Length: 371
Image (tube, rainbow, N blue to C red; front, side, top):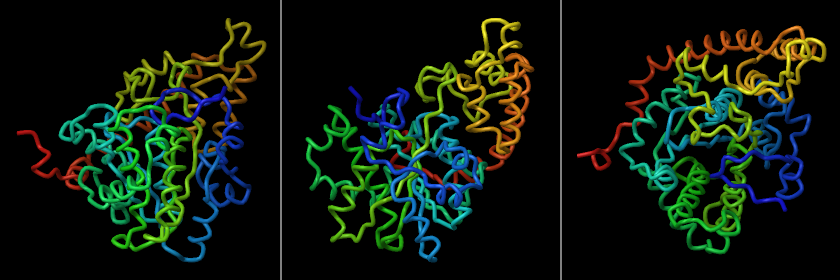
């Protein structure tokens, strides 16, 4: 029997087709892909589904104000999954002029990981520096912490009036009340951009991994329940496929430090991690030269497909060399490692210069500082 999507699990989705029939996800039409083809994630089908993205694009074409909303739980360093979402919001910001609402989910970090607010602050500053280094325009961004945004807190309390325990258990299973409160708070995050304080109702898109769809469905339902009171439009969403952990067994998760690449990894650590990354190689070099390898099984190929090769021609050559057997896995890893190390080096140089700015953007109120 199929299970409900779990936003807090590290399990991979084995059947993406099932999600369309079971949860009503919408497919990315050729027209949508064409409109977004400037970014590899859309062009390659990694962003594979949506809810009401067409309405967001129509509003943008009509010259209406639009917004992009996402956030991060500041429990550790930026990993490649975080980078994938960040790239999407930056692309949408630059392409459509949408204002970005970016939430530092310190309330959820406390609820899910037990991280006190003062302990998650350093992670938050580091995460924001990554965002800036990736190209986020701070002049067209509203950045905030959940613990400090009363608009979000007030919405969470208002939404609780029309939310039953049965509804939450049906979506998320039996959880502690802190996680349920985090769910209500996240709904506040998603719908707050439509408050009068931020310009009123507008089309908002939320790029997420598909495991976050329970949050999207819950929030869209709340938007409908409170439409008369606030004028909310149902938030749109895009869904990207999971990127596997380096061992190929689970989705990439902060809970498994050795299974992820973080944007702070040193060249030496990247080398160690890539050396242990699952490939699609054959049992012997002779067999691989004769039969070729299997890139569809290879996490190294996924790394380049999802994250590190923007040009389709580069990816196509890698696949051809792999399938033909002209390049063995060790040789392939050496080539990809150099490319990845170069990208990380440039990113880390930009980030170092932007850390002071990130700290200023997230200056911490005295009430949350350690005594």
